[in-house]
Length: 278
Image (cartoon, rainbow, N blue to C red; front, side, top):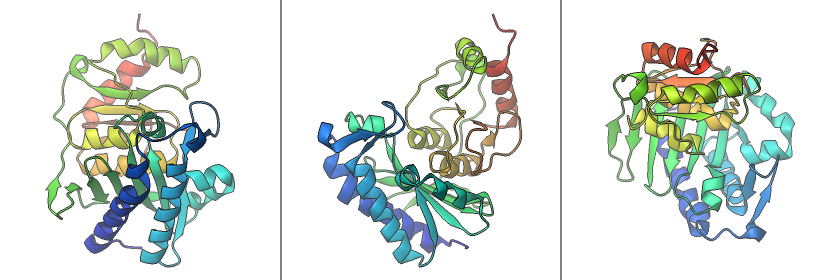
């Protein structure tokens, strides 16, 4: 499946429409009856997540009849659906609201993500910010762009390299096992700032726009990382697993580390995983 510019704009318009219809009217109004947890208390889902996913799936089916589609909430209900990202057939991966904890708390850091995965590789990615009402988009080999509601686009570029003590990196350590977790947490002091935005959509957008420099995650579900990893790479960043190998959307817990360029990536990896740090 080859997505052209018109296809990308149609998907972005769908994300905007769904955000306006299902997400923003409920923002700041999520009560206990509208919220439940999945894997645990730090893994919430709201009625807005579920409604938005249904609408996104229906919209993609209209735009691309017969396309394979998986959504975060659908996989939560039927884990076997995740196997679709390992198949050669193209599949859309949807995160209807990334940053659900923030969304449910009324905090303005959340986004909608869609990635197209083909033969195990991400070929297109979109991240929509319902509050800014704009969308960051990328196609493999085509660069990364900010797409405004009026149709105007701006090419995106990651920030210039900076020393480690000025590096701003969002580090998600929650799914790391020991001794890696303690090692990484101890080494965070080597960096300039380490905000945890609790939202991969906002994190990847911020890196691609040059506002922060890097991110590290251990759990790498495709709807959380496929779109953002491609966007950062197309904005000039360097994205790999911590072992230096390319990350693939079917690798769910191999980890992912993104930085401004290859040299910065190696310096950051060495700093975070150094077992000799005091």
